[in-house]
Image (tube, rainbow, N blue to C red):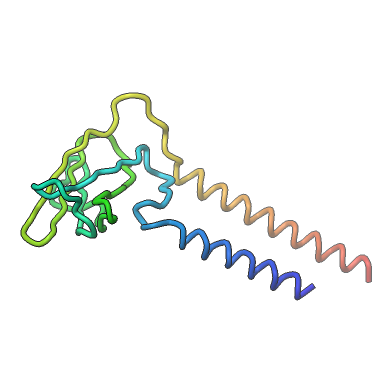
Amino acid sequence: MAKIRSLRLARTLLAAISIACFVSSPAAALDLFARHQVTIQFATSDGKPMADTEVRVFAPGQPNRPAFTGRTDSEGKFEFGADQDGLWTAEARNGSEVARATVRVGGGEQKEPLSPIWLIGGLLLLLVIAFLYRLMRIRARRTKS
């Protein structure tokens, strides 16, 4: 029984590590609370991609506080999840060059984000089910003895 548990734990850890390795950057990860996934590609003045460049993204109405920071990929692309509609501004700095982009997010059909209350409630429900299952197993073992 202990061997089966350690095999299950090893499989779970291996799956988590595999997922972490295949996601290229935290910005490319799934954001449960984002309404829109935005991709911006930055290029220099001569058209070359701004690879591995520092990026700051500003939410609508908050031009002084970055909502996201990160680095572009090898093609100069940066992805982020926008959780509100409006004009988002992104700025990439690579040495002496600065590239700025403004993106309008929203408008057409939107998907509603997953509410944090539903997420936490679902996790609590799973915890209660696991606890009740554990209690039933303990009682079943006692009746066998």
